[in-house]
Length: 117
Image (cartoon, rainbow, N blue to C red):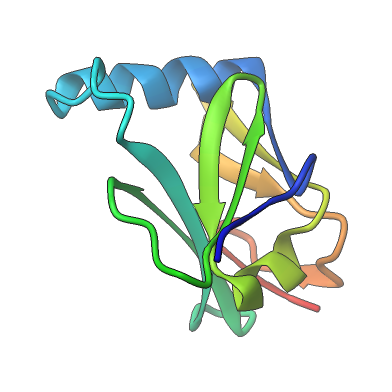
């Protein structure tokens, strides 16, 4: 059974624009069945890493919600680490692409791709 949660993961305007661009480049920009899947997996210098994919199949235990007009899906275990996290995108000279601004992280690595709680 799917559950709709409000404001579990926020999406900045810049991140939304980039996700929409990538969906179009993948040829699924006009398919409302596709969504952004975000998860947390073990690994990285700090112990946990973020993972993002496009998907069009929900699992029975997925947590589904929407922010800034984007459908985001995560598994329950990952949601525990991602509550109130903001997906950001930086494209400046020193831009790092997508990154997560996670208030639950007690420590992050220098590259910003892994964290610990």
